[in-house]
Length: 445
Image (cartoon, rainbow, N blue to C red; front, side, top):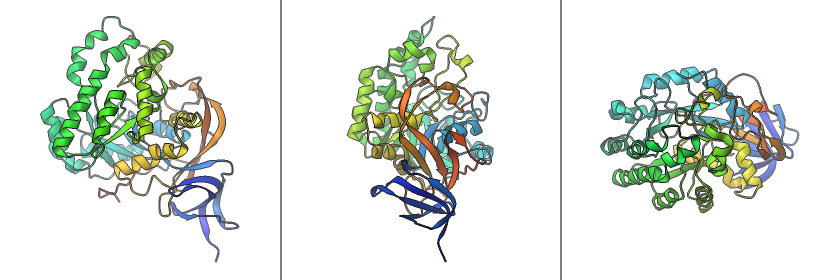
């Protein structure tokens, strides 16, 4: 009896742990069942990948999909639709919704909302707060939870954790990696004069200056050394922080965003105004160059989009009433592939930053590489395709991107999740099939 597969991806250049291989991949029951030329073997679905590169499914480990509470600018369906259109197969969503994700009930509610509506696989962070510090060890073990998030700088609801004593208590509870937003709240309050009284968006990196980030990172590094708790520092923006973090890689992993690698002050604020406003801010070219050097040196472990959409009406408010954040889940892959084509990183390094890296850091089960037994998650890309990113392409409810008008080389052609083709040639396919991501260090295997 001949072998039969649910999906065969034919003749693609596959990026496997053993290197680039031009071969076929067979998927059965949602998992990789064969890597090698399959000849006349039959498959329920055939995906011709000749001329394309087949990457492990991209995992965006930092998104804000705004549901519940702010569905007018994004929800779990529209955010996940944007993800798969951008070649992303799984997302980790942040807890600063309304209500905040600080309880098991709130986490379960998000999972229920995503089930049957999310186009990609998903997991949710639980937010650390004064009210739940004694329950965090249990919350982080719940199915569908990717870990704990600490906001050291201003956030919504009760999610601000600024006090060193409380930070220490959070770090002492549980054992999974904690994601950190590192900005010093005391300094933000002291420097608010740089933002108020009719200031413009270009003042944003003056208010939230590099010292604001450095102080918070220094504080968390001291506590990490004391408690021996592993942390993941999100959206790092300064070359000084990168130098600090490089000295603590035994306990600390590091994220950077495509926008901080691509945009720079003052040009970004001159061209985009408040659309360039995010936390931590877009900084000058010296810091952007420092981020690229840290990436080349291996300090950076992950690229996440920090997808944080707001409507154009909200963004149009006078600064600083204009909210911080920009969309990015749909543009992560093309923007970074353009950098690959420019020679700033290899395709292998891109895979490590967007697939293997997130899986390694968060102990994701069966994702992050093309290997037998792993989930049949793939991002198929055409490294030669030239396109212009446009607002009209965006599936996010906010309807805009800071990269509008950017010409890129490299584009996601198909998104495959557990052997299901969910996007092909810029169109979603079938129905939403997203499931909770599973983790090795919880009961959710």
